[in-house]
Image (cartoon, rainbow, N blue to C red; front, side, top):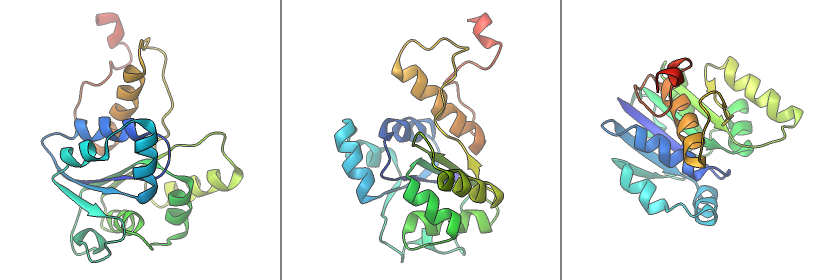
Length: 185
């Protein structure tokens, strides 16, 4: 599968890394915003490590990239984490950077878009933006935790969330036990 992963300036760089690792064997193109690079550094996630997991890395300002054109069909895209700024831009169709332009193209050509808003608590405008994005055809996947599988570590919780993103992209994985499978463990 050809998939774009965009990392924006919200907390959750480890989530992006786990999703990209779960896409091993797929053609992964990565966009990291300036904000994402700053946040990753603060969270102790190496941007170079993220980039090394991708087949191709794109600058968020590169509007000449093939990702900026709807003539280049992409099967899927995940924005993980998605900042509230990116959410607002997606909701309003403000495609002034490669992340939002690529997301627009994925949606208008029938691909899967998974958007992972990472903020809490939420304002009414953030909720309305999520609503607009969902109505536009995207999956909204906030990094909410589940407890049924009894996570022991932060990595367990991160794997669960990354698995939910991969589920929406249609990618098989074994990052977390499915409901009822925990009894078989």
